[in-house]
Amino acid sequence: MSVDRRKLIVDAASQSFALYGYKATTMDQVAKLANVGKGTIYTFFATKEELFDEIMNTLIRDMKLVADEAYDASLPFFDNLSRILYRLLDYREKHQLALKIAHEVRDMGTPKAIEGLDKIERALLAYIQAKIQTAIEKGELKPCDPALTAFVLLKLYLALATEWQKSNEPLDKEQITGMFRLYLMEGIAVK
View 1 (cartoon, rainbow, N blue to C red):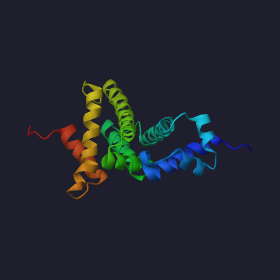
View 2 (cartoon, rainbow, N blue to C red):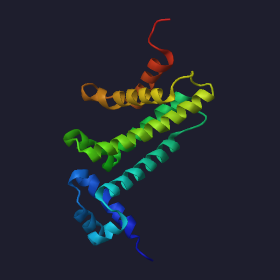
View 3 (spheres, rainbow, N blue to C red):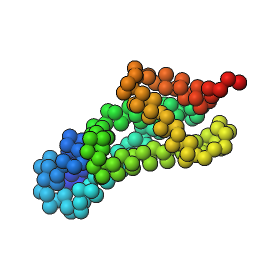
């Protein structure tokens, strides 16, 4: 059985980025963790940036699988949206690489780490936008701008799930779903 050196390198780099972040990871560390010569890495990846991009693409594919697993075609749009966003946030919170990159962005503002997080957010927005478009076509949602609506929904969810708890008691999944229903489905205006 031959050893898949490319996979060894990607796995080692993922581990290094998750432990040390983008900025502190070196190709020497990756080579040591993969138990390959540094030159072997360069046969597959020209730069650390290229290697990082490969890992971020894999992370995004994994997140899409998590979202697809959470989706239930028999449920209404907002129930599915809550399920998907909750699962994705949970995945991100438990996935060491995503967590480390988010901390690096917060603490150091490393440009490549910022680019990685932006790539994740763009992928999430595109996924939600597609679900919104489908819901509009099925008559579950009023006609609206799917891109703008995806942005508002994602930012509202992130604010309720992460920002709120910085100075308040954290909201659980049911409370967040309730807030979505109140603000987006029912509205807060007295009728």
